[in-house]
Length: 547
Image (cartoon, rainbow, N blue to C red; front, side, top):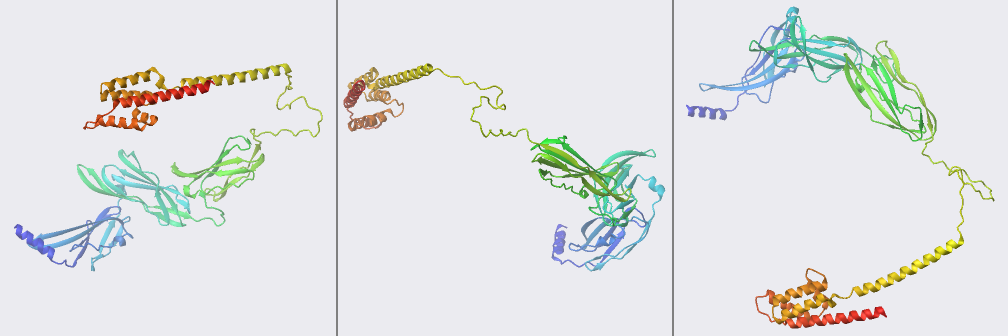
């Protein structure tokens, strides 16, 4: 059995794929109700990968859902069959007779299908567990005027999953505002979950239009069963009015437009260099934030203006779209004087009274005073005045300056005291230098140096090179004041070739495995001679200092 199956699979893979010979189209129910989804199936007797039926022809009369594709291969008693199936969910909005056209795949066409759509009864709609309500904020709008389209989906059963389509309108822009909201309502004693979505409608052309309501398809749980359900809202008709011919400027249709301002500081009198923050707020109903015009303020000579970044926002409140623009300007007065800021006016079209209106800010006058931090220049000096003035300017002091005379004897006594202090300082510095020279005599004259040489002599008599080397290291530390490499520094200071050679032999005898004879007494004699030479040199220096 296994071998037969393997052979069949090999045969299938080796056989070339045959062409499609049959294409069939069918629906799962006929007739159907208006607003009810049904399934259209298109089947081909082969595995199709590169071709598929064109379902765009259905958009004219039907709401077209997503298309799914499946393929399968059957082997029965050695007979092989292949199939490709396309499934499309469809729905009609109105009752009537419809024709699902023929489809063509790989050169093979299906037969058209005649479909009958019955009107859903009003009683069944009212008693339905799932239905949709749609409404528009106004039944007439001007071109580019924003309308609020609200969709509410009512569910009385437990929802498992579902999809709510987007409403459509020709020659208009529809965009959802925010996220959907969920709430509960009681209708005729039945509790419904209400899902609400709000859309912003902006028509671009005038004329009569229809907003096609969204459609819902999903699954609910009822009596431990899963049921497919659908619902369709009612379409809304709207009249779009054109822009009036006599309107001038940026088109701004609205029920109400206001223009406000805030000043910081609020006082109308400021100093030169004091920054002023002027904030303008433009608020309009029934338009989007993108439609708000920019407010340009004229330049004023003597006041510099620095505009800040504008901020546009819109929101929905009580079924109306409210847009707002906030613009801030930093004003910096440069020169003192009186300045008048001109009136600011924004034209807009009042859709309630059908005429042009203006949102205005009245002109405002501010006074700029000199800065209190400025330095006031002194008054110019009098051109003549041979007589000296005895009073200082009043801006400096209110009391006259009194000049006191110093006695001559006090000046002479101060000069003599200063000279005596200077002579004493010179004598003290000279005596200090002499004491420093005496105290800087070499350490070799002290008892510690003699004691070290005695230790070297003792170790030399005992011919103990280890003890001799330790005593030599202590002697070198005393002489050079260094704790590291003191012996090497001592040899540099002494600058005696014989002493260096003897110390090198001593170090070789300590660290070399071969026996080396070292004349320890010669090292002691050379160090003692060096000490005597240093002593005589220091005494000669002292005699020179005390002459």
